[in-house]
Length: 481
Image 1 (cartoon, rainbow, N blue to C red):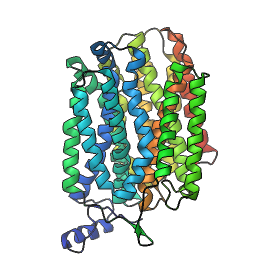
Image 2: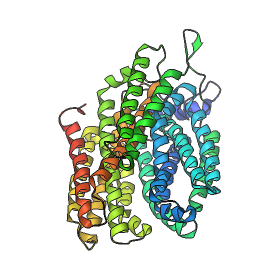
Image 3: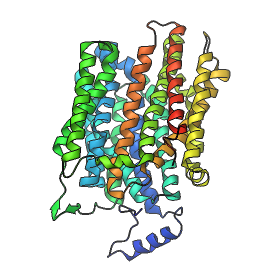
Image 4: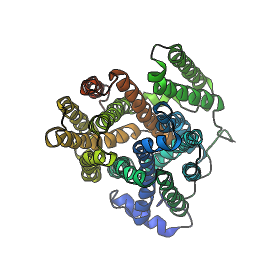
């Protein structure tokens, strides 16, 4: 596969870059400085997304106190972000392919920074929730743009495998460190959580303008420029938004309520309309033929199941340690620190592991690690068992996450043409976000009301079920490649 946006690809007037590109082709794992800088920019974008999701989670009690809002309203500080992120990912990925990945990345970072500034000075809970929705929408464009830039910068094979290992190291580190950073900042002032992303986003924006090459001219077909499929975009975004909104709000409204059932029916109707449009329109938003790539389909199914269980595990840990044991957010973050350390240790080696053993073997080992991790949660008791339960589970979760996510990213983008890498990235990220939202919704429905320890065990059964289903999706041949 060619590397159309490689920072070191030669231009006719740049002989020095041509030499570097030639050297890179001789040794795909020996990267010049500009490629490392590009990878750091892409990884910084996904780190920023992880930080923003996790920092807000530990600050919700302080925000509730500041605005005098209840738990139902406060949960939308998280859900609004997930709603927008999941709803706009596919559109963001397609826009990156169509209008230029660098352009979309820079525009998304600019919006992200501006809205963070507005959130830092919000005087109303409603405005804060709106800012979270817009930030999630911006992340729906920056995430697939960064990922597709990576896949078109690093050629398929050892170079891309290594790059994905580093990319996912930043993603997991952003989420795990965000819990600790958010806890510390919230202890000072919760508004600092909205201030911190501003300089990070601005720095990444300036670095992208300075070090990433300009986008090539837009592709043309039959002498005319490609156009965005407006009908497909409207039905897809509306269907995705309604689907995620219905799942997130189902616990509050009731799974059998008219609102929930009607929401699912309307969402399915919109998505069915989207499929009809894509089958007939000349330049579809999502080329349905991409789903003939068996590896891509298997990676997306597995990503949704894996993330549903992973998000549920973190939610259960939070309920157990904070609600039942009275621990502080930063104390809980320290329990999850071994998971982050496993990602740091394994992440840089993922490329070599995939090159040596193959993506399927690495993925299966990672998925298997989640099973004993979740089984350990069945041993939680009235007193926290740090050394016998919590820390071993954290280590296993980190091993599973480090191996599985990187392997899924590689599997889900291999064999995809450069001009559809943004679409592939959007699909994978959509699967992760929708899977995480659905996993949390199912978990919440399974947990009995109250604060007793026994309420958590059905939730453990849910996340264990997700782990087993993920293994079955790969083991029965769906993911064999």
